[in-house]
Image (cartoon, rainbow, N blue to C red; front, side, top):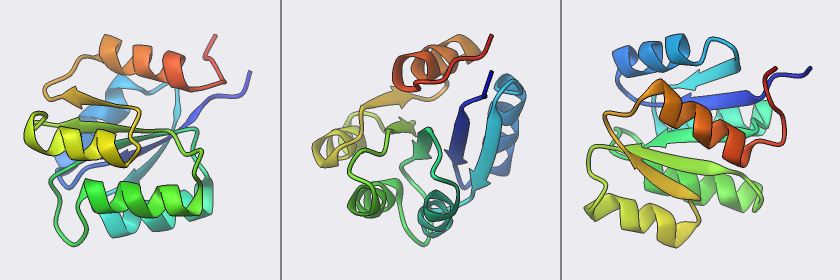
Length: 121
């Protein structure tokens, strides 16, 4: 069984590390800002992007916009502590949904099952 490839984008190293631990059954690619996320998306074409919204260099809204220009079928879910204000922007430009931090392993696994064609046995 092929494991889904996930792109985890967050400027906080500890959040990325926690998500990697939570999702150790998946193929994880990391990016620490929006610019890295766009480059990583082009290179790896992940099945799902978990995108923080508030980041330096290029925020999650702009990175989502750029990724969707590259691949209009990209599956991107926003992860944020600022769900109300910036979350609406993410949805408006094409994110599938926005999940408020803190989130659980179960929430992340449900997102992957919902949006990824590949499943982990």
